[in-house]
Image 1 (tube, one colour):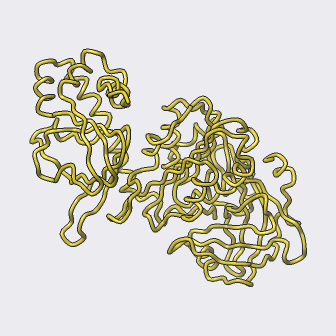
Image 2 (cartoon, each protein chain N blue to C red):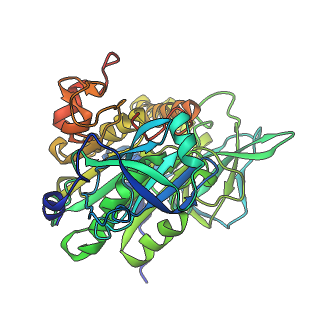
Image 3 (cartoon, chains in turn cyan, purple):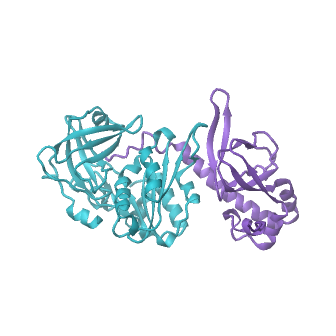
Amino acid sequence: MNEELAVSSRRLVDPLLPHPVPIRRVVWETDDTFTLLLEPGGANGADFSFAPGQFNMLYAFGVGESAISISSDPYKPNIIAHTIHRVGAVTSALSRLKRGNFVGLRGPFGTSWPIDKAKGRDICIIAGGIGLAPLRPALYALFHRRKEYGRIMLLYGARSPLDLLYRVELEQWGKHYDVDVVVTVDRADSSWKGHIGVVTGLFNYVKLDAPATTAMVCGPEIMMYYAVEELLQRGVFEENIYLSMERNMKCAVGFCGHCQFGPKFICKDGPVFALPQVRFFLDKKEI
Amino acid sequence: MQPENLAEVLRNHPFLSSLPEQHLQTLLSCASNVMFHEGQYLFHEGEEATKFYLIRTGKVALEVHARERGPIRIQTVGPNEVLGWSWLISPYRWHFDAFAVEDVRAFALDGTCLRTKCEVDHDFGYEMLSRFAQVLEQRLVATRLQLLDVYGSSYAGVRA
């Protein structure tokens, strides 16, 4: 289905021209992270579809653009979600928008998670912080075809219990979709009954059949580096490990060069890469 | 229900994976099955560290007490993991409190007994030390990562 999604992934008109899209709802996930639910077909009836892992360029009018991963269900493309961490001028401007306001949208751009390629295999999803957002569409896609996959594991790390994204869904995924959801936080008070520690420590709590496992990883680069080390050490083949990389982006179509990562452009060759494509550059300070 | 074979269960704990049989027998002579109920403390900061634990089920939180903030949980230890290395390092005192967040089943290994055996059998002592060194290294890396606050505001999750 991922290939079908990729084939049907359609951009809104000109890839360099922001298209005004209305906000249907704003959901605050944590103190500094919110989700914009957009109606991409709302303005002119144009349809929109995307593959899990792709991103859009969101334009806060008069302020600027940010590349934001799509975090909603690819089977429901009439409403698309972007979960956004408020950290700079553009994301702060986006955070002030309300239902009925418009954002400029370009996209979708980039490569996607290997949903089809991983058919019949176990799936280990490792997410850190807001890195869960680009992985959520992959989870939805897997749930739609749950019987076609083996064990699904989600290892998720966040700063504190209050920084966990999609808290209600995390519980539902475990119950309704036969997913081993294991969550950890870096710090917590005594009211937290879950795990405390780094996300790589969670491997001790899942049964990993390494040769049969495809891993999808998204989070801060240093977290991904250690997650990859752990996966390799446990015997997962490097060609079965996929990462979503982050770099500054401007054009999103491979013209400007802002997102160059070694010989690749994150915007058009990524953001999702198989590990062999990027492993050499992962620990290079200059890249 | 068959009674558990302690040697078999110990052998299957990841911390003791591939441990030579004679060393396993040495450990076995210092091992016992223990259980702690949710809300119970396994040990307290400053007490003499006489044991370490191989957790089988449940979860233990390591806590440090700050006068103004009360207990702060800094790490949890769960199934298939090892709790406590202070039995091995002088002055053999616990540095943290260990609190059972859930009911805990574990093997308790008598540290005093093991230290004596490490002195007598240096091969066994080296085996123990190298295994605990791995745990220490993992915890050190994990602690540094936690200190980095990698999910803080520097990680935007956006690409512009």
